[in-house]
Amino acid sequence: MKQFDYIHTAEALLTPRTTSLLTAIHEAKGRQSVQAVIRPDILESMTAIARIQSTSASNRIEGISTSDKRLNALVEEKTTPRNRDEEEIAGYRDVLATIHESHDYIPLTPNVILQLHRDMFRHTPLTFGGHFKDSDNVIVERDSQGNNSVRFAPPSALITPEYIEQACAAYNNAIRDGRTDPLLAIAMFVFDFTCIHPFNDGNGRMSRLLTLLLLYRAGYNVGKYISIEHLIERSKATYYEALAASTKGWNENTNDYGPFVNYLLGIILRACKVFDERVAAIIESSSALPTHGKITKEQRVVALFSQTLSPLSKAEILTQLPDISETTVERVLRSLLNSGTIVKLGAGRSTRYIKQRQA
Image (cartoon, rainbow, N blue to C red):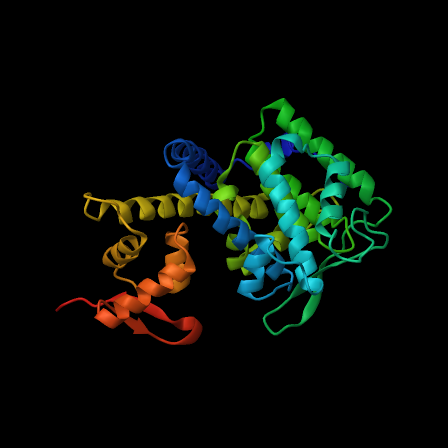
């Protein structure tokens, strides 16, 4: 029978690589705390972008999607779902908002997990939301050719409630004990949750929501400003490889948590670095401009092109300057193209823009 012990198991994970990742994340946490105090204006706009990216990416990993326009409207609650995909997107939006706003009051318990799962399916006619799986399931992996194969057979439906109870208890014991770095406990719990695969549907999305919840509760707020789900989606192949490597021997208690733990720590550290980069880009785009008078959003877009040698897409501009609207960016791009300040490269989704520089 599977055993859950995040205190003693964590001791074997403290390799030089893992320790280095932990140290870097701890240092980044301090920098973010400072920015949260001195630049709340920047962080507010970054939060809005992250919510959209998180909702989109986490659902897209599971093959659930809608148009960008509909997605934005759904996240901002300016429209109602019109199909099954949008119903599930709206549910994820709701749970994500709950975690962002109320994480201090959401402990990790089986009942809380069931409530979050229920809310994720609240907009759908499906009846299994808020209930553990009623039949055995498998974790299927799809290769680049679209072929499916069984990667792992999770525990039976009968033992699932007990395993979730034990995993939650092991996590809470590790946090209370204080000897285990919370980041290690979070990664081990999320991995075990994924292996248990406790629901008929929504296991992947729930694992990412629980990651965010536990990071919040441990004092790591980077997921509020940078979409961890988006970073996971961009490294999906590595994500599945790490899961597969750590899954071997799971039922026999001989599995190595290391591959998945290091993957997730790498994602968190990447989120921290993206946070630093975006804050720096916004500050630099402002400081690079004349200080007399008010610096306009249009001037900040122009300054961004002056600071990079690489072509920029509209999406990249919006990411680096998240407080500037898409309409404003499009207007500035048209103006810069007409004046010959920038040059357009490519077409369609591959469109990029670069500053015209004199030889």
